[in-house]
Every structure is written in C-alpha cells, then in structure tokens.
Image (cartoon, rainbow, N blue to C red; front, side, top):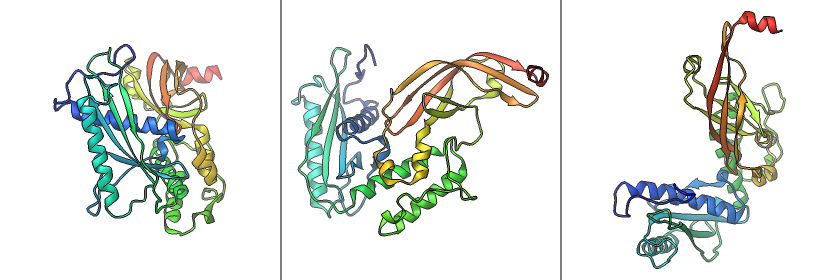
Length: 323
C-alpha cells in the first residue's frame, strides 16, 4: 500500500504472490458484492468441497433474501489492471467461466446466480487496481434464500460473539440454530426470543470477563490487555474486539426480519484517546490511558488495537480515599 493504492512488488509468476492475490481476490469480492447487493460479511459462507460436483477454487455464497448468490473470486497481478485484455486478467476470466460452466453442468446447484469477481492489481503505485464483475444469467435455485440468509447470519454471530459474550447467550443461540436446522418451517420460531435460565431476555452488555470493557460510538467490546506488560509501562498495542451494542438485542430478539435486514451504517473507523477502567488485582490496580483505533465491518464486528500511553498504579488505600 502506497499513496492510497494497492500494488504488488512481485510478478504473477512468483510463488509468494499467489497466496496474497488469492486473499485479496476473496476480500475484494466480498466488499464488492456487499455494496452491490446490500448484504454484509455475516451473510457469506465458504462453499464446501464436494466429490459430486466441481468445486470453485475460492467459492463463497450468500443470500440477499431473494436469491442465493455464488461467487468465484480471483486475484491477479497485471501489467495494466484496467485493461480487460491484459494477459493475467483474461486468463482469470476464462478460468472462472470454465469453472462456472462445469459447476452448472453437475447436479443442480442451490444458487440462483453464479458471479465471478476478478481483482487485478499492478506493480507500481501509478497503476490503480481494477475489479471486474462477470454477470451471470438468473437460474432457479433449490434453497429458500430467506432461510439461507438467516442461518448464515446466526452462525456468523455465534462464531464471533464468542469473543465477548456470556456463555449462556452462546449456548442459547447454538441450541436455537440447531432447532432451526431441524424443523421444516423456520417461521414457527420467528420472534421467539432467546431467554436466560430465569426466563428473562438477553440484553447488552451480555459480556464476559477477561479484559477491561468499554463502550464507544455504539460499539461495546474489550481490550485483550496484558496487565503484566502494561504495569511495566510498555506501550506495545493490545488487540481490541467488539460488536455493535444493538447486535445483542437483534440476535436475542429472534425477529427474523430484524436479523436479516440489520446492517452497520455508521462511520466505519474510530480513532481517539480513551481511558480504560482500572485493571489488575484488587490490591494492585492500574489506570491506563492511551489511544484506541478500530474499524467496524458491515455486520457490526469491530477489530482494532489499544496503545497504552500512561499507566498509573492505584493502591486500594488511594481508591478508598477517593471514595
């Protein structure tokens, strides 16, 4: 990355370049289709390999609620990314079209639409990257797009909320997912809220221990802080992970329309000084100030880092005196 553009320092024949361009291709495909279809990261799943049907190299699929979409993602290094006729770009296009044809000729796919997304990057900051979309014909699918989208989103939140949510909410969500996959008509459980053992609803902050929790700009999360390191005034960054506060209520409500339509629409980046809650043992706590930076994806998941700047030791006697 330089001067706001992405480029490669290797040519397309270099072995080291392939894993990088593959990951870039998948990331660009997800971001591009999110914008085109109004979906989020929570809607996607990797297409499992199958011996019964040709498998796309880097196939992913999602639902916009009306159709199930399959995407074959390709990343390539090209001398002239903006020219479709550029050798590596043309080869990627041919490869995708051949795989999609083989995919359709096998047993019926559940997808209505099979897109190809090619991301071409150059070898200098003066050659801007380009994204090409191979638009398919519409075909009838076999799965219910709404149910597919709902189950994908709930599975996404089950996997990622585990970073900060209480186990009781995760267990309730896992049990609900199992029930939804077993029953024929998922609408039976629409708006049947997830409940705690005492019958009450789950609400944010449905969070667990393991690090100082903070809430900023509608995002609740925690810094995965190494207290031994910060107590020695080391200033290396610590990871921050969080979720939009509203997600806890959306998931717990089991209102299927809310779950499938929810999308983070606020600014996606946050960077400013903050002070964490006191951390450490009861008899030896620290107050830590520093700089928090994170980004939020369209599904409401926040990742970033916290860099300590000032670490102040606070004894129990000092805290009692302040009270």
